[in-house]
Image 1 (tube, rainbow, N blue to C red):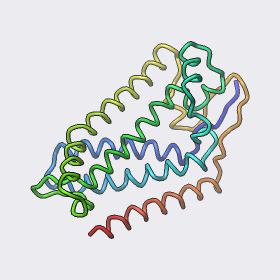
Image 2: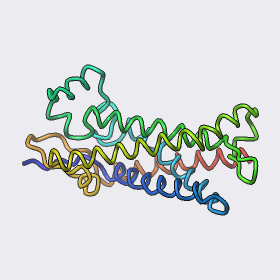
Image 3: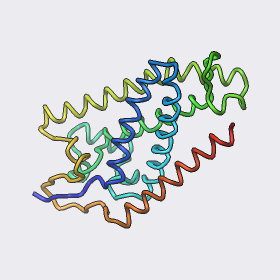
Length: 220
């Protein structure tokens, strides 16, 4: 067996950081009241993480790059038929890629809607005062009634897929996201994961967080 570094440290930190933000956002959103202060803080943190992941998808380790795992319809169909290549099983397989892209897209959409939302009681997003009433109403409806449910369903499907691969195929998808490595029958290229790449990732995240902070301050 060949040990391959699949998930670099920045990708793993992003993943588990987003998990914590998601749990916290659901909890604080349901509780409401004073917890909404933390709801917004977690939302800004999640937005910073998502922006970082978009940039890291073009400059991160090879298996974290969109160009490596995003597949077309024909490739997805071949994988479903059991005709996929071994390389497609190193990082995100074609079906897993769809799950990842859907989660990223809807998470960004949900947070964007939250920036324009207004509960007309005590809480409003930083950009709500800059939009028309119809835009704010739609954003509020989507954020509280639609986007939240879609994200929860996507997360449950994601977790179900992990359980399926563990039980039916004997493949542990969680361990590589913890230690970064995966045992492969063939020798594939390992993702770059050294001090230089980690410093680059940290700088990228700081830029993303600074942009989010600047947006919030500008909207005040």
